[in-house]
Amino acid sequence: MLELLKKSATEQSEAIKNKEISAVELVRASLERINALDEKLGAFNSLTEETALETAKKVDEKVANGEDIPLFAGVPLALKDNMNLIGSKTTASSKILENFVSPYNATVTQKLVDNLIPIVGKANLDEFAMGSSNENSAFKKVHNPWNLNKVPGGSSGGSAASVAACEATLALGSDTGGSIRLPASFCGIVGMKPTYGKVSRYGLIAFASSLDQIGPFARTVEDAATLLEIISGYDPHDSTSLKLPVENYRASLNNDLKGIKIGLVKELVAEGLAPDVEKAVKQAVETYKSLGAEIVEVSLPNIKHSIGIYYILATAECSSNLARFDGVRYGYRTANPENLMELYCKSRAEGFGPEVKRRIMLGTYALSSGYYDAYYKKAQQMRRIVTNDFLAAFEKVDALIAPTCPNTAFDLGAKAEDPLAMYLTDIATIGANLAGIPAMSVPAGFDADGMPIGLQIMAPQLQEAKMFNVAYKFEQSHDYYKKIANI
Ligand code: GLN
View 1: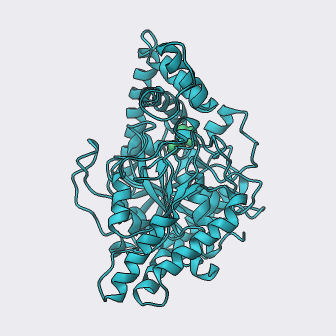
View 2: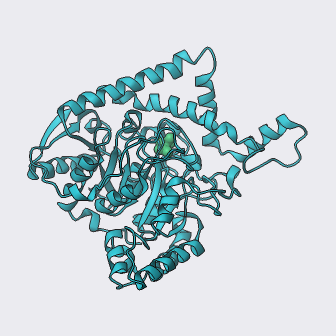
View 3: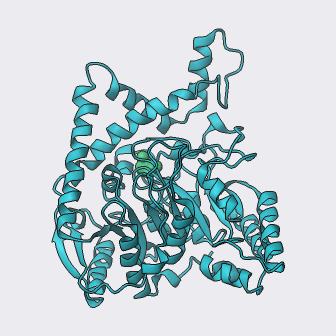
């Protein structure tokens, strides 16, 4: 059965259509693997076995009746536990939502349901998606399938680990500052953040609304592109949703790269880069040259400020978004408060973890009168300047490449006590969120310890098709993506 689980979603759905396997068999295999492995991995907060099997049964019935089935019908998927699935717990890995049951489906979830994609469980994350290592979950840490002593990356660590360990074939994550791409790179899989507005966030627990995007995880570029096609599209429930037709990204995956211009981001291949990561990026440059692309060095002079900008804007937005968790309307409420103020204060003090509290305090400070101009407004102005850097770069090139992270997965605990060191792991990913552009991570080799390295590819807004094409050609030139964590 492991051989079956190791196949791509495209292969698995072909096998279901051709009646080589049933969807129920496949979903059972996925659930069995989760039950066997997840104690060591910690990728799931909860399983949704019944609904997954019900969905699989529907797929098998359709196949038996000779009906057409949608793309990826029957293929097991892990849903990050900050997206609502009706009737299941949506905890955001926070004590404050530990017993919160979703009253409705997120738009992405509804699209999965409509496409008969079985959701096998809710994937662990950093509390409220705040973190880079998945050590900030209130419940348990996620371990990296390539080495259980290492972090999987965050905040969508459970989503990435589950796909890398073949517990699920696909997953959804959310990316506010790199939370899809970083864990994809640490776990050796494909992870993609779409253009801001491509995928509805209705039913996603908001972290920083001007940055949040939902996106796919998969083990191949083709699978990620197909899953994006399934979850994207206009949604009147999200005011930032773009009114554009859904695209078919598969059609152009294999386009020739001759004549394409790719920019290597100078500032992201500079000092501080781990030597093995640098080597992998240089090899990627050679691969692209051999595919006929022209590689030029490109500068994003203000990218170095992106962490500072992000940690003001994201914390400011989260301090506002998380105000709704007051012990009255959602989730956890303190026992026996003396008065209303104590109910608010104690519910929040007892319900939120330390990183979430740090961010609420930082964000509240940045927005407070007297400091607003110095911090929040300044950060907004700087966001525009970083965005302009990207726009200028895309005047010269079709896509940009850079490492996804300056280093590979680090040991559990290595940065947990040092928030600043943790924030620095986001240096290469945050820029794309500030500029609202699509970006993805693809497997690009391994370091000396056998840990995966990710290559990041970025494209102008709404140029997902071009980005997938650039990613696919690279993927198909190597065997990296075929190597699967031996767990
Ligand atoms: N690591 C970043 C943070 O801690 C990004 C998180 C995310 O993209 N959700 O905020």
